[in-house]
Image (cartoon, rainbow, N blue to C red; front, side):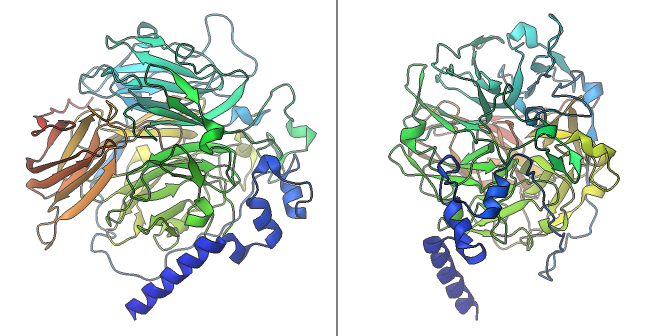
Length: 634
């Protein structure tokens, strides 16, 4: 019976790959339209497509929540969580309010997207610092009162100090995303910030200061662009980090429609127009020339040959296990993009063909954020994506053959459809070796606060516990006030800021102070952290795949295999700690750590002590072990 099911599944997958899933659920006219890049579509589109292309046609979804069907029982379901998340931002000194658009009412879509955040050890002292992207308002600000991005240095005692001006990062504008990587291989991780307007590349000088290297690096843009998510990656594996920058909308404030011009409404409420009806932006790929400069290779690399557009967040990973990094992009209101690396400097969008671009019934969704991780511990990296209010988030299981199966409902994520998700992440909150899921929420339109029927503007998080059987349990109500407090959240990042061995979360919010969600765990479980240093590969080790084998459960006959990759960008517009964290449960020793570097180098280490940070240089025979001491709770 099982063999018959597997054969049927494989045949169906081959059929979907050859025909595309959309043909099974959409009219041919819709299929034809989706297969054509949006900026080349004919005016002879189907009536539905014409409606979506008109200014005034807004995003609206009405997916019904649905529990998963009966399935295998998990012995941990319903048990005490053992973890609480407490917002300690105020007592930690994170006192900078993020400014983004009007409060209560927005005239343009530009005012809605909010900003990202980074856990980023800029001074390389072993304690992750926090960088908060900041925004702007249409009316501008008096000289000297302009909001800027903020860099907070970790004081190693649970508090932070604002060092923005001293570091040279006090830049203003419509900030969007941030990502980190050592683009010039000098041993210091650099910072890239995307903007509506002109992006910024900040070179880390290694002494606590930064230099704006945007122009020197060849990254000045000839026109105003709405740059969105970003990530450093070495797509050609030449040892130098390239740069991918997503683009949302080809947007000009001088000609952009206002809510009244459509009129543009959401649930009968006047709101900012778009993205339907507005021209989509074109994603950018910059090739690193190896001399501190970049060249735009977007068109030649195939960045513009995609089904979907309105790109927001981006995550990079080797999704087909061929040793080359692929790029996944969450697109608003259109099919997601999966750029498969063709190993010759070009990419091909296989999102629909691979089964990782649409809803379970084959419809485009309004994607916001994206995270990648092996949630079911089968050795393949899966994809989770947040979507618009009235819709589920999306979970795509990697089948290991270049294709994905939608597991949104089977996994239990289909029970929530009310809130609008942004930043998210697979992370092991309780160190049991299985990836849990955190989702930050907040409505896009502040005007909904006046509605008694629509979801509120400020929303609580979702937190899902991994039940270790392919399913998740919604434990939001059990996880503490940091999860249940309502905020207008956008970007979020994951890292162990207090070095106590569990993962904390920092959240950037719209027109509000950030959240710093400290994880307080009752579990006495083990862990390891790994920091990579490339030699033949890029210095940061971005793209390195790490396998950790350990017997996390003493009653299990087999050890648990965990995999992850060193990654720039991800979540929504954000950067998590570059030190990879692996929960080890009750394991007393790590049987094996295996690192596959982008250069092709493979390093294997056996019988490592638990509860250590390992700094591993490519090609080294012995990892450098560090004992890290937790700071006292404030």
